[in-house]
Amino acid sequence: MKIRTRLLRTLAVAALTATTSGGLLPPAAQAAAPQVRTQAPGFYRMMLGDFEVTALSDGTVALPVDKLLTNTRPGQVEKLLAAAYVNQPVETSVNAYLINTGSRLVLVDTGAGNLFGPDVGNHLLENLRAAGYQPEQVDMVLITHIHIDHSGGLMAGDKRAFPNAVVRVDKHDADYWLSTANLEKAPADKKSHFQQAMASLNPYVEAGKLQTFDGDTELEPGIRAIASRGHTPGHSFYAVESKGQKLVLWGDMMHVAAVQFPEPSVTIQFDVDSKAAAAQRKKAYADAAKQGYWVGIAHVSFPGIGHVRAEGKGYEWVPANYSLVR
Image 1 (cartoon, rainbow, N blue to C red):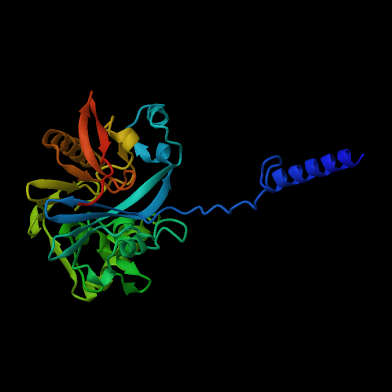
Image 2: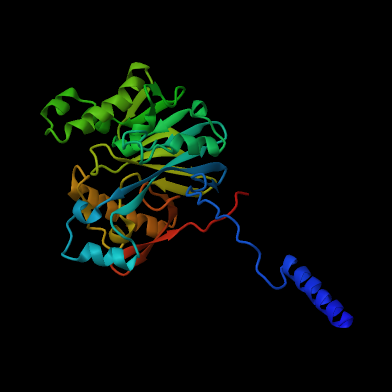
């Protein structure tokens, strides 16, 4: 009996030891970790010759592209979106680009600021700071065109977001969007576009910080404007070149990559002159594919930097391969 009692005690101790060390029974479940639900800071850096280029995200906006795209065939948009595994409304990036030439800091486009409301966009300044820069350091802001998702970020509340910067834009866009006569004769549902443009640009006009140009213009060593009118009256590309490397920033030359690369003739309701915009797009695609330079696009998935390759009767977008800055 004593032997049996000692054996049972030994087995009980062994079982208890195994249990506490995780040998026989699973450990007690831990409390679930809360989901974070935030992205990493939205900036991406690359070197272009001696220039440092930083893509900056202002966030995304949801676009019901089946209702917005024009010059389409029945079912065409849905088929192309499905082929690219893109659902509607399409979550569309809003990208801007910061160029550090070594002597000057030049920002191309500014995002929407708070003009899309509290839940959309308005991330450019925080991502600029996350990238290591301050708004006060920006010397020049180049606006591809005066639509709110490109010029709305010029203001931070009632103050100029870039207090030391000169803003440059094609005079055709400035003359069109800052005209009170155009505001007064615009349809009721279009008046806000002019009012928002004036709210964003006029503080720079009053401070003597707005400078216009006309078409193809050298703006800074290594940076020049290229007239690409159609989407707006003064829509401009900006070509950036250093040490034989080239990047062309396209602004709103296109909006929906899954559709407009394979079908360049597809246009969008945002175009002031859709026929001219389509012609500019076809010309830009062909040149980028032939020359092989870098392209930066405002509404292609962040960071919106890559190359264009001819594919059949259309084109294909080849995003930049992620790499470290060296």
